Image 1: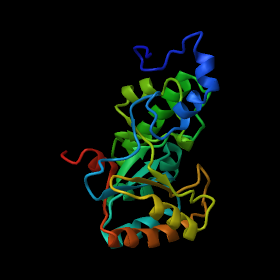
Image 2 (image 1 turned 180 degrees about the vertical axis):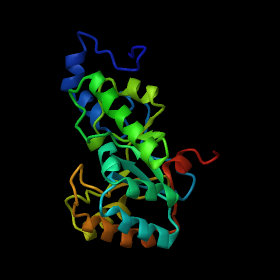
Image 3 (image 1 turned 90 degrees about the horizontal axis):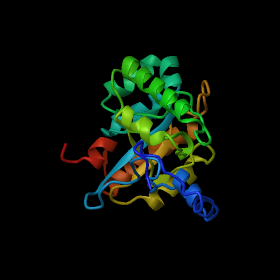
Image 4 (image 1 turned 180 degrees about the horizontal axis):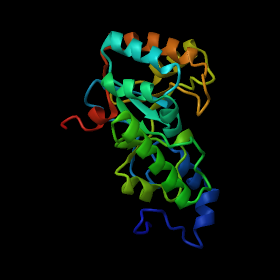
Length: 241
């Protein structure tokens, strides 16, 4: 059951059993889980449309990705960290100016598991303010770092008017080479897919995102050839707006 704040209330007798059965692990990391707040992991299957998303940016490598997307006329959604937005304000603004969408990916890219409700609210709020003030666009979507949700997140999302977004397929581009990234995503794409890549590496300064850039260079034309249309998360999930 849920409290008024939207957080799951564990029954004294049943909580341990649910956790031991793997329920808590699914609630935290399961892509379809909505236990800790409203969340989407894919869009409608009746349209040949997909959303390409990027986490952890902006970084020094983001402009290279923007160039590829512009070449193909593709719009994407960038889930940005507030600290990176403050460090690279011009790059954050360039994302918006190019017609892309910005989502909230926390301020400091923490793992929210076992953190207090106050910590979660302060971090998300700080990121929301940084993105809105610097990039000029208040995010409507939120993706938790590492895809890990926790108690208190529902209330924080509600207070900031944020809806959670997971992914249909993730490229593991922070550790795989471009060939493997492209293979993973092309093998798992379908109508309504939300694809996850990374244009940063946490809060690292000057990260090497060469594998991501190369994967995007190959992936975008390949999926366009297959007939997919790239849309922002907002457009994919709310096609009539």
